[in-house]
Amino acid sequence: MSRKKKIWKSQIKVFVMVVILMGVFSTTVYAAMTAPSKPIGTDDGIIKCAASGAVGVMVEMLGGDLVSASQIHLDTNNMPLFMPVFGTANNENPDPWLYNAYYNVISNKDVTNATSVGWGGTTGPGSLDTTITNSTIPLLINRPDFVTATSTDVATFVDAIKQTESYAPYYGIGAGMADPQQIMATVTAYAKGMQEVIDNSNGKLKARYGSPVVKAADFCEFYNRTMDYCNKEIQKLNLEKVKVINVSGVSNNEWAVQSKEAADIFNEYIKKAAGTPIGQTDGIMTTSELLDADYLLVGSIVIKTAIETAFDNAGYTAIDIPKIYVIPRGVYLWSVRSPEGALTVPWLTSLFYPSLSDHPEINPVYTTAYYYSKFYHYTGNLEEIVGIVLTDVSLPGGLTVDLSNWDSSIVPGMTYEKSTESSKTDDSQVTTEPSTDNIADASDKDTESPKENTSGTSISTSDKTGASDAVEALTESDTGSEGAHGAPKTGYIDIIAILSLLGAVASLVVFKGLRYKKQ
Image 1 (cartoon, rainbow, N blue to C red):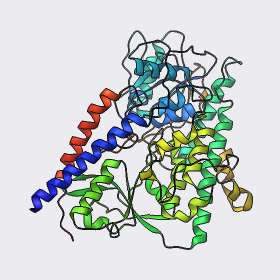
Image 2: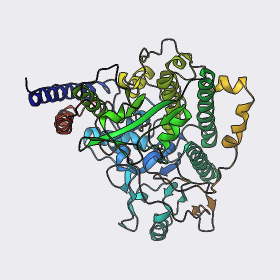
Image 3: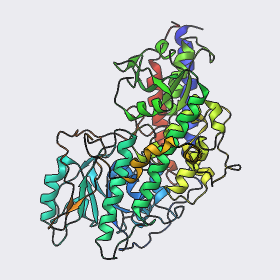
């Protein structure tokens, strides 16, 4: 058989595998996560919030009703778990506005009192839509009590508010989300801002899960303690750091990778799990150069399959190549800036040092179950939701999604907190006012603790001049909505079948260029 025919034959195999994989994921992963069958009433006594991108996850986590959001929040392809987790009966106290938005999406209805879109763009946080219609802007249609805005949108936003009648919400400018400390500072600031609105409402408002400030403190403690515990246990092993490459796609027979020098939060997570990013500075590597890594981390099953095919075509065997894992995608992708990044270090630790998966404080199956129950208030089948987030392609060998032996009373990181005094050095990050010094705006512009002015509108006194206007897309640019967790829940099977086929065809085109010789 000629080389050309062999390559074409391998591409056909990949094509068939992708079709099967996407079809299976599309029709089964959400089968038991029942969507709303009818709309429900809303409660004017719950604080109403407006937020974009990953900040919307924070608002939901802190117990605010998300009445104005990004388009991506209501997109079951790009954020397939967002509405099922926060907008169904599987939540301890679901957001009724999101619940009704989910009902509208599933049933193709247009009921009122549903989350509206206040930010333009179909991927990522998007930009604030300041189009004035009927003396208001889309962001204000559902009259949020607490609003976030980017520094570049503030002037237009304030002018638009002045044109409304007897309405001026509290609002603030974000502190940034470039690293774990900024994420914790942002969550804390949001909580304090929401609490200030609640306190100033004279008893008219509250949050769905109790005090937002308490919820934020619990989250920061989890985030800090878990990272510290992982670091402590890794140091005990006294092993060399593993070498890691984050591969985001393929172009012209070369692989797009995350530069080892990039100021990227995923690089930070890799380092905290005692890994060393080795992606080329120019962001491009050949197939043979990928062999320098111990681990390849990718954004979708499609990229994983493409890399494996390239290695196979080049004549490499399984024993020659790095371990390849798909980055988990829960309510938000774990490799980008969001509160769910709190789960990334335990997951990476379990990959790089599999023996540590025996620790219940590190085991990613257990930490994910704890996180979804504690911070997302998910009361549905935990093993099912964890199985959707952590598939076989994301877990180290020998680890499965099994909660039969999980002790839910074990708080990740708390064993370390009780056994050493050194962890007390992080207490200030949980209990003190988050610093705004030298904090640059990240792609999701979040909220600092606002201060009331005489107009009744609360604004941040921090001027984030020179802030980046760029926005972070939820998914890596080459992956789109493909991958193990990119499909909507059951109810969209006809659409998904078409999308799956198109995704497979696109994958085939990508693989067409993968013709490497063994180096």
